[in-house]
Length: 416
Image (cartoon, rainbow, N blue to C red; front, side, top):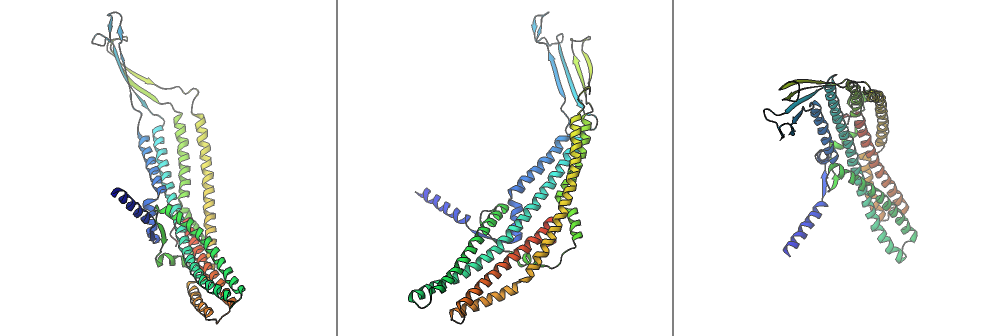
């Protein structure tokens, strides 16, 4: 019984712990991301594997040791006659690479390791971008959700009061219906917002590697940095992208790897030499004979022609892909700058001060409506306008953050 109670207590605590809200600044979220993200951990393993391939490429083939021992001597009618007057032979052979094969193989492995490192850095860039997008989307959606909940609670109180008055015949049913219509519209907006919150919550939990409900709580500097009116010239942004983007570096490394591969495949067409020494006690022309062996394949039919052609085709392909990547990056930077201009313009239309004024007016309008100083139509019109403005402000703020982060992302630079 005690064991059961202990188990139930532990289970309950674990469930409650799993449901605990966790407030995180942007910096704290990124710290958890770097520590816990499984995609990053897998990428680090891939980099280590690529580096290990360099070690393997440096290794030469092991020498081959052969031995020949007499099984049966028909003259002496003896088995395993391998003594001083019997027969035994030993040999050792070593493969010697020619034509720079080993050098090219090492260069290819090193190039692949460099590509793996750049790919890991690009994965980190992409995940960090998605983390910031999800973080601020969740933050602003939470702000809208809280404001909508407050509006709905106010309306709920009014509807309850109006329902009583309608039953008494003091006010017409159409007034109650108007309030209910506004109420249901707000509820639908809240439901849509909740779906967005759940999606961003899931994304943020996956990226940071924690199961708790995350409550984004950015410090002031993490918000205001996006509200700067300054922007670098488009040519400067493009130059930063060309210098810093990891996918461009990957494209260049792939061109280098393709060039190395062509050299490697050509070197594979050059025959290698096998050099060895063998000892034969009685089975050759002389007793205790020691011989030097040299072997080389004759390149009559297979000169690695097919692989060389494949390598050359891949070389041309990598050059085309590099040009395509450059054009794609420059286009991304241009589009990101245009999005920022639009987002900045929209954000200027509504600012935090105007929203504060709306909040002050809202409190006054609600009080005046309860006191009977304004009509129902005036009250519902204001509520609709206020809610629309509040939702637009948070949406514009979210769009501005996303636009700024897209500038950072496309240039791989800390512009904001």
